Length: 142
Image (cartoon, rainbow, N blue to C red; front, side):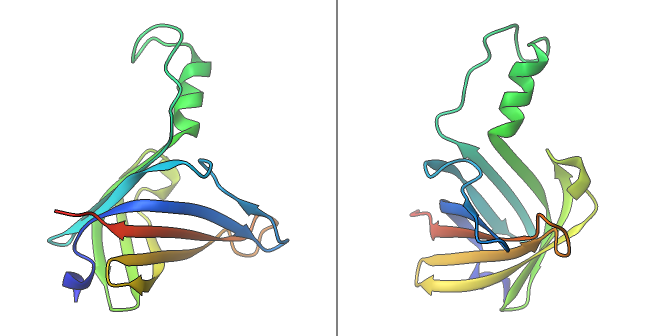
């Protein structure tokens, strides 16, 4: 069943719909990135566009403010996955957000066209920040 989502998908949009009615685009409405599924493994990278460049130092010795800004504009994670035809579960092995490492992240898969899908996930249920993440994807052309 994994064949249904295997391959590379480019991000179209990412919004978070809060239970209080707010809609937030974490990286704005001009987003870049992709998710790739293949042979039981997956990789996801999302980025604000354009990203700010460091104004101090280099990759390792830049000011903490530059490093924090880079984190605020970028999300990446990877691991194994399983797809049952309705839900894809990402078993996170590595992630820029360490709290996700070792967790299973579930997303409902909605096919919105032959080369389009939306992944939907509930986040922080039961808290004042409870929300639904909605990520729209388009299959990358070969």
